[in-house]
Length: 108
Image (cartoon, rainbow, N blue to C red; front, side, top):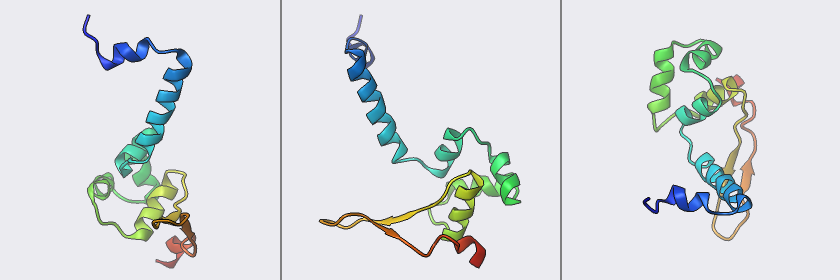
């Protein structure tokens, strides 16, 4: 039998495996695309499109974009039941949560 990573992990104590799985989920969660996030929430493009009153094709295009309006992103996250928070990170300082964007959707 080959000595694969999966086999090595199976040999670890359960507490260690749980710690590895928890950390893996944290790392994966930090790098989700909009599509990944939607799928993780078990939502379809049709689900999100009906909440946003858009066509499913528009949701597909939106998920592939790398440049998106902040108001569109706020709407998309709200349609999935979430809330968008903006955080600025600087070297040698704690992260700063930016305020004033809570009602951006209403200002469109």
